[in-house]
Image (tube, rainbow, N blue to C red; front, side, top):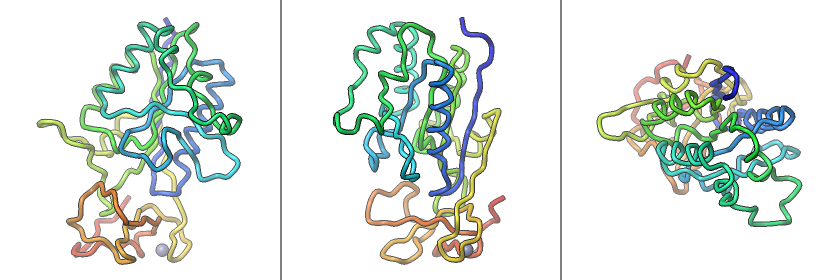
Length: 241
Ligand SMILES: [Zn+2]
């Protein structure tokens, strides 16, 4: 059994605030410590394929397993814990060999000869309301969790996770759950001041309050400070603290 040093950490903030870089730096530390770990990413986020990627040009990308739900994540971690050799053999190899060097492959981070010590989850706000139950089980199994994602939606409200049955959960709960919390700021694209919010623009115009929380389309996002964050049809934005 691993010693009792199971962590939960989250890095959150608006877009372009260096959240994914936190996971990439964490992966480098885990590699140095020779800890076996796995990286995950919700299937909804297809922008970067199955990789955790930072906007920093020099930084390495991490190959990640795509998960459709929190339960899916738990199933994979159970397999990794119970039958590590079989799990290792089934890990996807890198699609493009030319990417080798700039990409950290799953087969390099997951070791079947030692206990799984950590899991990294990018864009965690795209998961569902069973997330906290699953994170508890993962940690009880001796696996630390490192999370990254937006804390607030385009309205400036805590991002609601996908509802399952009666269970409701927002990023406020996920942040509250984690032992270590790191809030990141970006630069407002209007004034250059620190930005804690994410502006959604549709055809260059602020999106209406009642547009869907998760939207896959032609919209565009920019980090903004509270003075330059606009939501159509919202009379007043509660201050993001
Ligand atoms: Zn501003």
